[in-house]
Image 1 (cartoon, rainbow, N blue to C red):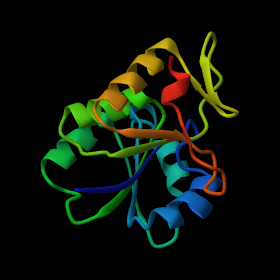
Image 2 (image 1 turned 60 degrees about the vertical axis):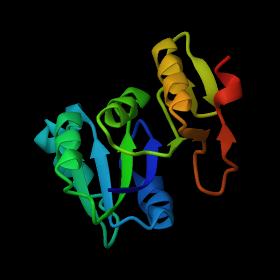
Image 3 (image 1 turned 90 degrees about the vertical axis):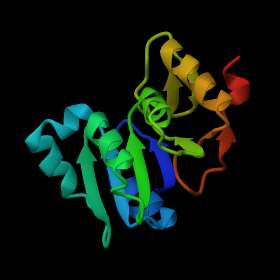
Image 4 (image 1 turned 30 degrees about the vertical axis):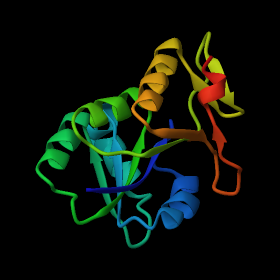
Length: 158
């Protein structure tokens, strides 16, 4: 399997992803993993309208993603993975999906949260998850758009 880019972004598939991140990723498939969107036909159809040119789009549940990766469905593809929360990434790697680097983009502002960048916040649960991901050897940076300088998050987690 070839995950060429993974990103946390609360808006999932949107303009900046389509026009900047997707082309930069050199992926041939954008995979949105979000149970809520995947189980809502209207949200799913709306999101599919933002499909980057020349790329396949999968909008699937976490369970479906894990099953598909286990079956080798994406072994010959270059996948750009987008999720809302780091816990989804942790569940994927706990189930054998290889992810080397995670880019934290925009997140929702969370109450009592740690600010990772001007547009990224982490709840206490997220902080613990990021620490687990870092301990697994994953590189994690914050970066809103490709033109921004990537900033590691490890020193911000305490």
